[in-house]
Length: 258
Image (cartoon, rainbow, N blue to C red; front, side):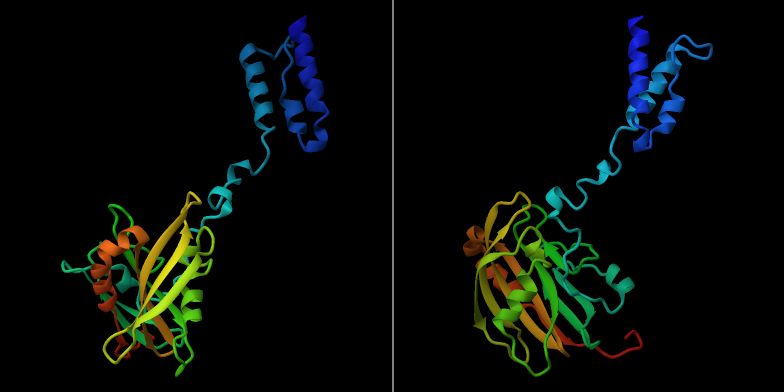
């Protein structure tokens, strides 16, 4: 008798949910005692009814990372002249990395640098990173610069430290202090030293330092950001500086690719 009462209460609950679109549940619920019922059928109908009570879309509640803060791909401004050739590019045994890129105005450029860390195969851009500890890395950033204009610190900060960049995935960096340490000449890039504080995926502050190498082709400002934590920078400063000084950007031969 009690079992029958419980079943009828369930039937009443589901009936009252018709306005939620559960009419199919009412029709599929089997009441014990009828000719077509069995224990297995009854249990199956209860499971079916409970599964329909899960709100639609709950499986995508955390799309985009915890709190929706994460991004799958930062905007580096890198445009490959030949994507197929770029995908096949490898790093030499000595650490040399070379790519053909395109400036915002379409001018082709050959970009190269030398780094002791392995080249990452990624569609997001060009990056060499210490995959062991994950502290040191060098990556390429490209932004637009009006032809004939000088490189301004504010433009470097906007290109590298905006919320769309690699350091802004969890919030824009703060306490940014940038200064020129070596001016640009015909053979070497301008080199800047910057200290800043960024947020880790765990939302903890991390003090970092970086060398920013800057060179222009067409209206493209090509940057190599060589970085590590502030604590490790003093010990590794000379090797990081060598990476920064190795950055080379020149006009590429014109072909029918662009």
